[in-house]
Length: 417
Image 1 (tube, rainbow, N blue to C red):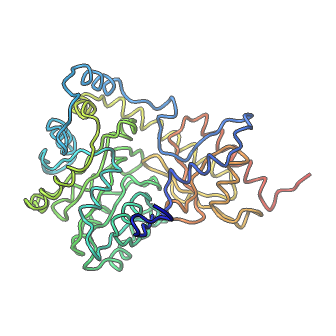
Image 2 (cartoon, rainbow, N blue to C red; image 1 turned 90 degrees about the vertical axis):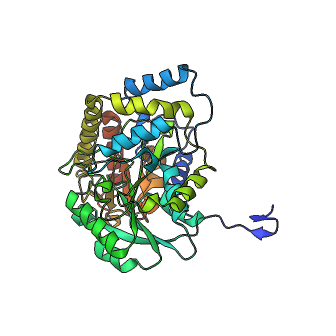
Image 3 (cartoon, rainbow, N blue to C red; image 1 turned 30 degrees about the vertical axis):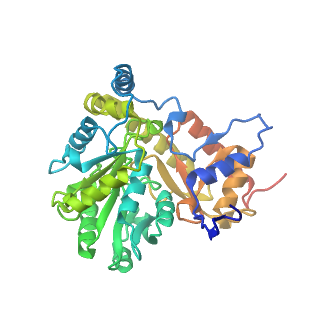
């Protein structure tokens, strides 16, 4: 194997930016020999790094009980344990006008694997998929490996990051296989209203395409709009619902996700479609069997107090973010987040004298202030920044204070004495 070739055939590696890839480069750019300051990362959506975020004892005990039972050390069915599929179907059905069956649920290794499954099932020669901009770059990466053409529609910051439905209609054609919606939104922190989600469903139905609903941040809503699952509109348009325990239960490392056919009209119950999905799962490795076995207890016994505590911390942190951003002249937040764990900030380069773009901003910030922020280019918006606010309030205040100092130091109005 030489120069990217295998057995004489050239292999193309997708050149898509990934969040983990660029965050690793930012960390590597920091002088590790300078230990005078701690590194504060506002880049990765992993709240477990902060002591104020921790999972419930119910979840921990359910995993321990499953492991100690000595019943779940073997292989699980490739589509998931029956009791796990049934429990997730019942959990998701609480918010739907119809009941999901356990056969509608397939267990995945986190939501990322569910994304890969969705795109693998839809890929065919000449097909295209409609993705939001800004969005989650794993979709672009999976599409590149599947040779799916990506077409981006804009989210509108002046309208609470709503989908530009006119753009969706203009982009779609007979080869469009899906429209992807992320709600609650990553990276924007938006939570779509019932009315907007219904318009999305009606638009997809008009275009004769299905909706992939990425709801990994499901129920993490703290603004005026409650979380409404896209599956509510499954009678209008077929929906593939993707989700996981990761964010709501604060256990991203457990890698317990799901791929669900939210489709009461039954398009996905076609025997050929079901067989295709099942066969694809035969080549996948799902979550550990004992983690799957813990899911019924986790979903049934988790107290509402735990969820409310998480929501309150996220609301407090998002408020701190927005308040501190107002004090920094060169960045602005056009929309106060109402959910998820992230927000987008617009960078005003005209106020900075030696910063060329958002990537330059983030690398210089990392080297000078030991603060990690994701450049907007990584999620599709050049000269914007994404902040993850699932951080303890003290660290968040400290990090944003450093960002302010950095911006003042690089400001065109800053006078040096």
